[in-house]
Length: 543
Ligand code: G1P
Ligand code: ZN
Image 1 (cartoon, protein in one colour):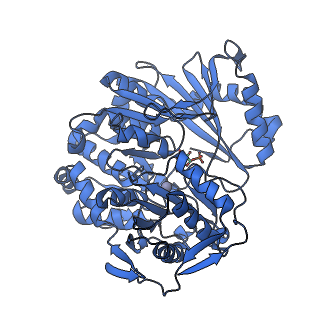
Image 2 (cartoon, rainbow, N blue to C red; image 1 turned 120 degrees about the vertical axis):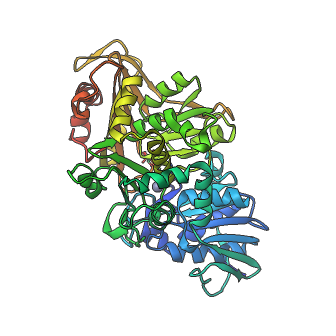
Image 3 (tube, protein in one colour; image 1 turned 30 degrees about the vertical axis):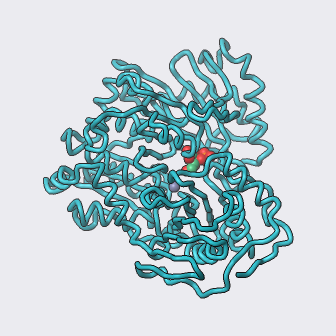
């Protein structure tokens, strides 16, 4: 074993954010950088001696090198066993599943999710715990503490392990098991969904396009949708994971999955369209001529999940992140089940899922999942949609219209202001925070404010409190605006503005979202004084 001394931790004091540590790839490639993080993880969990881990990533540039580094370090730290995806590939939900199925002590996910990949783009690493979910705040805080004081890391001087074929290999005294990335995940999906029914749907001529965005879900989608469920060849596009995601952003939203969106809005659109992100945990759902917002998707899945075998007994509850629209709350209310509002970040769902208080979870940022793993799961959401469409025989547009007629519609849009100077972004947050107590009862741009607060979350399972999780402004008209700073950006600050307007059953559900949200937006712009404080009112990205 080799102990490498580092003069000081190479970290600049930035805490791992909403989902692990994300930096420019070149930063991760600096000697000792990745190593210090990995050693800090091992130190923070009381050492790796005798433990087992799952390791895999989304295939982006530096993925394979990082895995070799981690394997050597795990062996030097005395780990007993590491399970790795063949070729270094594992989607984030597949890592979560393997941790749970194999009962490992935890896992390391290598990904910067939907951020671009490449030597001049982004890389990331995240530690997941034994329940399969992202490490909770007490553990990430411990990792951060270690990164501040670390002076050395342990590694072995060995050749690279061959990750190209499945089987077992040995590094020092540690066993490395290389598994097919898809097999265990597919087996789990078979237990949740009626594959025969979905197969019959495809056999009846139902058409679909799945855009894997040159990212990790390609092999999963091809195996499950085409090979197992009989969807024709060509259903899955951009199916080969590439190190730079075909030079695109592997972010499944109408902006970055524009080719798919254009096809779905055209005269020759298939019945159903979907996309997933870099590491396979996000999803986008589109019907012929109609985009489904992630918030609506969560609500609709909650209302219909019982149609799939894995959820036929009903749901214990539905949890959504605070900025996600209230659409799922209305479903939970009608079903008489729990509903939860949590801070942004999947890790906050873990306790609710472990305690059996929630079955389905979702975020407005294209994340949906359930208690089958402890990560959001893109392909799972697509399969649940397919199962529901197969059972109801309805089109996506019919499903949505029927849903709105029953529950009302929550018009919704997120506006992102990217690369805002950190000071200016903080000034906006301070400016609004300073007004919170005086806003209720006042009128902004013709909209009466009914409530305003800074969101804090009291975890009902472990009693922990997370403060300052975003600013919420409610309007008497049934509108809501939310402001928060992104925890995943890698350049300056990203200010996120979330706009929502409820239209009850019987009201007009046919407006375009921009029109329906115009009053809430005008009020928010006035209250937050964006023009003055950041010098612009138009966002970079609207989703
Ligand atoms: C974003 C999303 C959030 C998601 C996270 C990780 O975080 O908004 O819902 O959990 O990515 O995928 P943010 O940049 O807003 O902190
Ligand atoms: Zn992701």
